[in-house]
Length: 136
Image 1 (cartoon, one colour):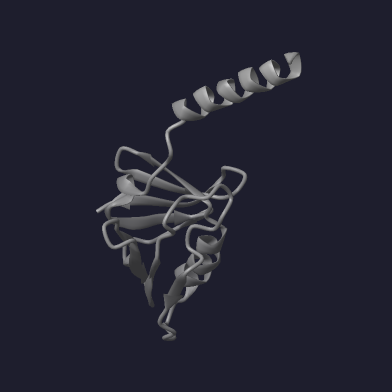
Image 2 (cartoon, one colour):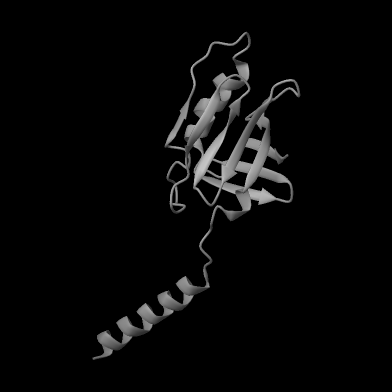
């Protein structure tokens, strides 16, 4: 009987703690964001690299500064799961592919995000900033 009571108390404690944890949503991402930096690479103002989020339609779109991006947001944020796994892009060759060559692989490492005012940090599994974006 004591083991059953301990199990019930432990289960109740986990339920209470779990109900206090707010589930993260994509709501704060809505709109368009200019890509300011990818890792250590500062994106020049002359390059129109951006990402847009249509939360109602669960869509991601944007540009690498050369090619167009499009894709779907996952239905839920899954811990350590790539956020941009369902992305595609056009495949034009441009005179300068520096930003695109950094941006496309960086998107594959993004598993989380943090919005701080008008800044959006896209984070990797270790919590490091993969990309920095600013609200348009």
